[in-house]
Image 1 (tube, rainbow, N blue to C red):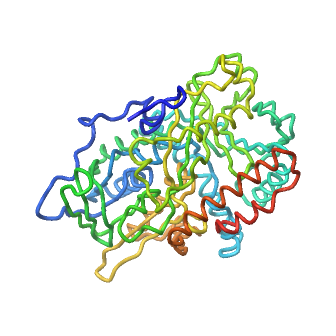
Image 2: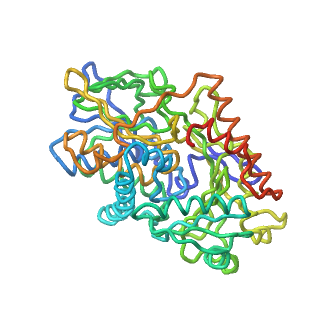
Image 3: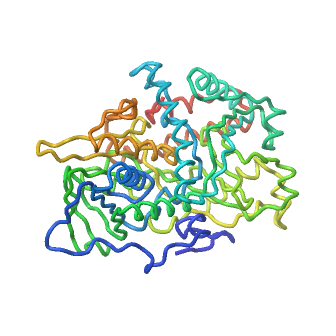
Length: 488
């Protein structure tokens, strides 16, 4: 259900789905039919987002004889896969320093090159399967505004330049502004390994592709628990018809909704992220802004923003609003993506600071927003994504992937190919990457979890505000927040 907040359409899953058209009830794949006996299959994938769809796709491509079943609570791509910022980029979730210490520089280089190749793999498959997802390989542009951000950008440049495959370029203020006219630009980084996509178009195209390969996709089917070889389901909402799926391998591909599964409440924290999109902007505005290369755009703030120039010449921009709901509740953003008004206005403010010319487009002097939405993404305790498979004594297995912390458009494809190899029992270069089998401690119980997340984002916002007032060095508050968060 949509509503209006200050003239901005809110919810409706996402702008991407509203633009494409939400699948009507009659267009959705049938839920798991009620039965007194379990459904038997080779691989049961729980979650119909990118991770689950890519895993099913590559398994059926590798072995068409496999019976692969995908179980999705709402409809394929309803979660983060249909709500994200559309960045198909080569970033390694959580950074590389931890992997460098644990696995060495060569392993980090191999990981980086694998992620680079994954960007091209998604582009290749989309073309091969006829998925028109508005793909444009324009690279990624990260801007610094002010001296504190500039220092952090220099550190990021040094880290990226130290490993193979990043192909990063330093842009001074003049060159950076010529590419994208962000007000107050001090410098920027650019690299070529990033494409803009339309998230919902990719999700729908993948769902159609896997069904075409013979994968059984059951939408409207909620998994309540997963275990090696067994999934318990509900159809028809909470307390609905119960079912059971048995498989040689169960794949947990629930990402930000993992907290809803029995026994996994504290594994990964479901972080809220929000987006807004403008009306299509006139040619005169684009002449002022530039952005001809259509690179994705980010910044070096602590509470960073991420943006793209869409295929129909809008700006879609996202960031953190209310970062976390007490008790890891995901229901608020599961159905319709409702977004608090203060989050909408916060993102509007960021947009206007980047591009003051947008204020000239409306009588009230505010950037012309059309739609806002939110979703959840999974954050592990150390902010590092993982993929893996563990076998039980009876030979069945439970596999998983997730914890992408916002880099999932690319990471899900790499995870899907890695899960293919793990499920098939093949040792490959992908199964040797440092994120495979990575485990981390669980998040703290409430209220510590809520206090920690809201406290660290309050610290980050305070640090950003201090820099906006002229602070030239990164605030100690930000360093403290990073230690609390566990990703420094």
